[in-house]
Length: 101
Image (cartoon, rainbow, N blue to C red; front, side, top):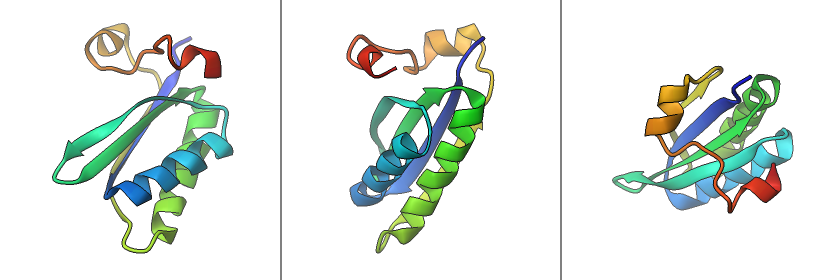
């Protein structure tokens, strides 16, 4: 069964750091990708079971709201990503993150 993908995009680094921290603490998820989207907008992507990704993303959204000046740009959850999506987007588990699964 494919693992769900949850992504949060924020304006500024402190808010994405708080979101990533809250996400991994709220559920059994693994950070598979993070980076700069555009115009000082950062994103973080996590993978895990659908029942773990949803509360993790919700916790990340709440963490962004608590950061002074933190702005949530967007978020989404893909509960069952197809194989061709995994082949195109960088959401696979790399050797660097496999130890945290």
